[in-house]
Length: 222
Image (tube, rainbow, N blue to C red):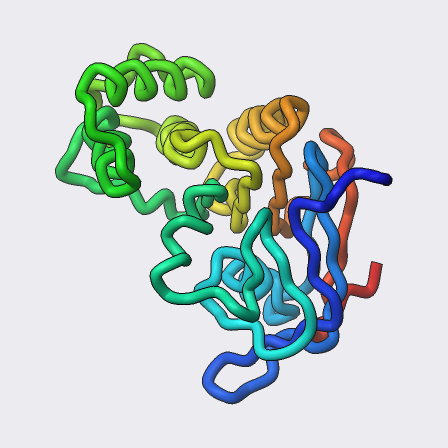
């Protein structure tokens, strides 16, 4: 590919509490790529995702996410990096005391949105995109697991991210609902957004093809 990668990691080392988690890792992701990150428990999948959104620091090597150099990033710059990213968690992490709309509004205000009409318009837009256009008034406990995960994807789309990172997004879902969620993420990648899914679900890899990157003992082996 001649395009500039959205993610470029070259020979990076990542430590957590002085323990080496990722070593001399090389990884590139280009616009619109749909990637499955696979590997045994403890192979470093979640650590790699945490590295990409700067929760774990990069100690060595070369690391660039969009326009941010991770080896040089300052704490004050991390929120701006994360606006380039959409993060989808296995356990949803919705605010249980707020409606769907209020959950999205909370994120928007935290990332600099101020005008109520623009907040409402964007909320409606992303909920419609994930098939939840009529559910904005619902509380999280009134939604199924699949619906909650769709809201999480809507939340991840709020700031029109260049990259979506999904950590076991189907881990708490039944097979049919899992397929719906992966299809949704697969479709999102077609618009040019990079999507990286850490998963153990090999059935989804067959059903919705993408590039497979395998981690083993903190290194890319595929």
